[in-house]
Image 1 (cartoon, rainbow, N blue to C red):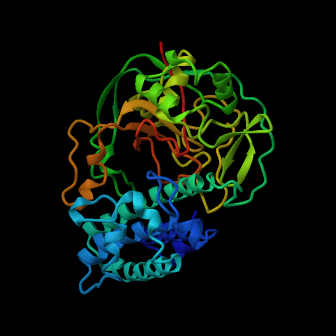
Image 2 (image 1 turned 180 degrees about the vertical axis):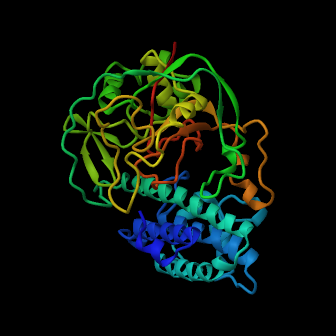
Image 3 (image 1 turned 90 degrees about the horizontal axis):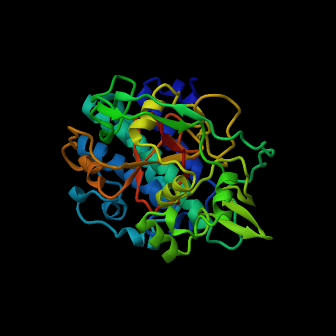
Length: 425
């Protein structure tokens, strides 16, 4: 459906650019300068930094490199807002991003407006190769929109006042879900991944390519993700206290960090509550469990007599599912995983929670990183991380697809990450 932005900017890429940039501003609108400046942990970044880094991307790789006579808004700021691009030189240390009280949130907003106006002017005349960079920048910013939300959640969860970013009416209690049903997946040789370049009107990151064959054994996937009530049964059965369920590294992590429940769960009046962007509320039994690590997902699967799906199994099943379906982000406002709707077949493949797979984040056969600084975007992180598939309630709708490869280290759990079980047949 066309929006007013689509009408104002009939070029599809221009409309995407303005829509994405506007959503970032809307997500940050409830925040004070202090909210937007503080960093909860090394993995997270201040909201202000997300707004600035995504602007640095467009100013650097589009305006500076490809628009004649463009002058940087402030020559000091690239050092502050480069993330990990070694080709762009030295940068401010990641763990210290929360110390950047200046520039202010309002100054960052003014910079964004300046860069947006410059891209608006330049975009109609840019060659196809540079327009591809603009498109990459839009999808890059959508990734940061999700991070902005999870990083603010991480920050607000540390505040004893349990502040809500957005107030919202709670969903009515959902009935207990039916027990998991098993859906047999494809077996034999299947193809996964994407061919590059993608067809006009589509997008994929370089790590999704090339398309290649994968051999699947007979297997089945759970028809829905694991719920909070099922996770409580794991806790009540001593799941966090029994080493036999855990990988060695996972068990060491549990003991070292004192992990006893998903992130953001806390005991309130003798029962479990969880903290979200709409505040602290009792855990909803029928909603998918969220904010769990790979270690926890793997331990639960072992406890349940199952396993995690491979990314090839997951993608082959999701290829026939509408990736724009499900509970995903459409506009700024409360986000929270919701209970699965009644139905048959695979449900919640996209939306609500990302789903851990048992696959390591490694290059596909024949993968080649792009030349230059943008080649650092994905390839250099293909070590020690695990793949998640799908999308979450904080993922901008239209950003994900069946071939999309999200990835995090196995101990990380501040994202909206859950689990769908698999088993061999």
